[in-house]
Length: 317
Image 1 (cartoon, one colour):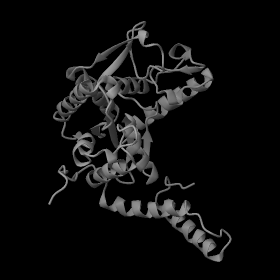
Image 2 (tube, helix red, strand yellow):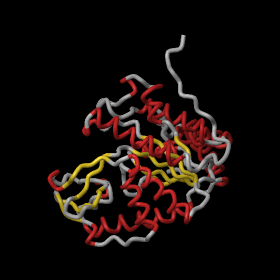
Image 3 (cartoon, one colour):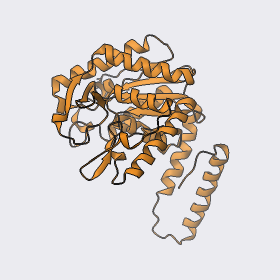
Image 4 (cartoon, one colour):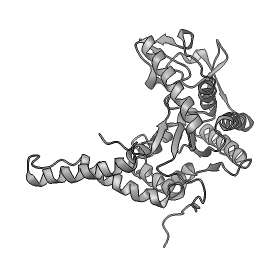
C-alpha cells in the first residue's frame, strides 16, 4: 500500500553542482534554508546578501544595482523606530548607525557583483507576487520596515510582469556570465497575511511565469520544492508551530530531493566526510582530558587537514 504520492524527479545530466561550483542563492527564506545546507556541507556559496527578498522585483533591483556598481549613499536610507533602514534590503541589515548600514550595503553589493560574474549556479526562490509600492516615490520596495501602511499601495504582479522581471534578471546576468545555470523554485511558505485565496493566486502567477521563462532556455530549470511540500509532505507534522513554515524535518527532506537531482555522486562522498567532521566538532565528551578524547581530536584534525588540502576553501571553526 502506498501512503504517499511522490513527485518524479529526473537527475540532471549536465551542469551538476560539485565542490568546484559557486552557488548564489537569492530570494525568500527558503533560499536560506537550502543555503544553510550548502553552508553546512562547505560548498562555495553566497546567500541573500541583502537579506530575504520575497518577490521578483526586489531581486531584479538587487541585480541591477550590483551589476551597475551602485554606490549607496544617505539618499538610500531612512530613519524609523530608532534604526536606519534601506527599502532595497531586509530588516536584518538595519542598523542604529547610518554609516554602518551604508558600509554593509556597499560591501554586500560589491560581493554580489563579483558573485554574479563568477557563479556557476544561481538558485532563485520566489515567495510572493504581492508587492508594496511606496506612494511618495512610486518605488516598489523589498521590505516596508514597519512604516505605516498608509505610505504604500499594495498590488499583485501579473504573470507578464513577473516574467519580465525574471527575463531581465537572466539577460543582465548572462551578459557578464554567459555560462551560468539558473535554478528556479517557489517557496513552500504560505503568505496567509495576504489571504488564503490571494496566496494561491500569487503562487500561480510565480509558477506560470517561471515555466514561461524556463521554456525559453533549456539551461534553466524549475525545482518543485513548493509541490513537494504540498504533496509529498501533506501533513501538518512537517510544519513549524505557525503551521506555515516547513520544519527541520521538511527542510531536510526537500534538501535530500534537491541533492538527488543537482549534486554529483562524487560530491556526496565528500559531503559524508564533511558531515563526520561537523558532528565530531560538536561532540561533547564526558572527560575532555581523557586519552581517548585526545586521540579522537588528533584524528579529527587530520581529517580536516586532508579535506582542506584538497579543497582550500573548506574551513572548519
